[in-house]
Amino acid sequence: MPLTHFIQQANQYGEQRIPFFFLIDFEQQASIICPINEAKQQGIFFDIKGMNNIDWSIDLLTQSFYLEKFPMEFSEYQRGFNLVQQELQKGNSYLLNLTYPTKIHTNYNLKQIFQESSASYKLLFENKFVCFSPEPFIHIKNNQIFTFPMKGTINAEQENAKQILLDSNKEQCEHYTIVDLMRNDLAIVAKNIEVTRFRYVEKIYTEKGSILQTSSEITGELEKNWQNNIGNILSKLLPAGSISGAPKEKTVQVIQQAEKQKRGYYTGIFGLFNGDTVQSAVAIRFIEQQGENMFFRSGGGITIQSNVEDEFAELIQKVYIPLKHNQ
Image (cartoon, rainbow, N blue to C red; front, top):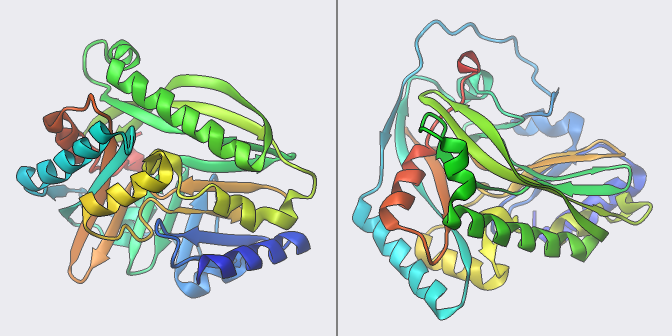
C-alpha cells in the first residue's frame, strides 16, 4: 500500500477508534495496515509488550540452538564505509546508520526463532521474515508521545564495560546527535519537547553473552483527539532517525548509494493502535528468508570518528538471537 493510502486509512481507523496493526517499510513503498484481528489472516503474528495474536500451541524444542555466521567480505564493507566517510567529510551527513545482510545457518526456522527469542517487540511475517527488536519507535499514551533512541553498544563482559561505553567520545557524539535529531522530529508533531532520561544503560542478552546499550527518553505533548491524525503523525516521523541518520533526507540518499539494495521492512516500523494508545518499534534484529537461505541484517552508526575495523566487528557482533533460556 502506498504511504498516502496508509495515512488515509490510519486516520480513518483512528477517528473511529478501531484498533489496528501497522507495518511500514524503510522506503515507505509497501505499507500494511489492518484491524488487529485480521493480521493473522495475512500471515502476520506479533508479540508487542505482551499483546499478541499467537494462535498456535508452543512447540517444545529439544534440539540445542546453533547459529553460524557467514559475513560479507571486509573489502566490500570497506567500500561502503569509505563512501560514507567521503560524504561525512563533505558535510552531507554527520551521522549515518550503515547496514548490510549477513548470511546465516541455523537449525531453527522463522517461526521457531519467533517463539524462542526474547524481546519487547516481536514480529513474524510468515515465510518472509522474523524480527525481535529491543528498540521502541514511539509510544503514545494520555496525549503524550514518547521516543527512546538507542545508540551505543559494548560487550558487557569487557572489564569496566559500562564506564568505557559512557566515557567513549565516539559513542557520546553519536548519542548526542541522535537525541538532537529525535527532539527535532517530535517537535514536528508535538509541543513541549523534553529529554526526560539521557544515556541510561541497559543490558541485552545474546546466545553468546550480553551487551550494554545506551538509550534516552524524549517526550512531547500531542493535541487532543490526536487519534484522528495518527496516520500523519506516523508518516512525519519516518524514517526512524536512529536507523537512518542526520540530516535525514540527504543521509538516506547516501545510504542507498552505500548499501546498494533496498532495506524493505528491515529498519521500518511496526506496531499497534488499540483505540487509545500506540506501541511501536523499529524493525531491527531482523532475519529474512530468501529461498533456502536466511540473512540477518545488522549495522551501526557511522560518524567521521568511526574506525572501519571496529564498525565491521560491530556489524557481525550484532548478528545474534536473544534466546529466552539465556535470560
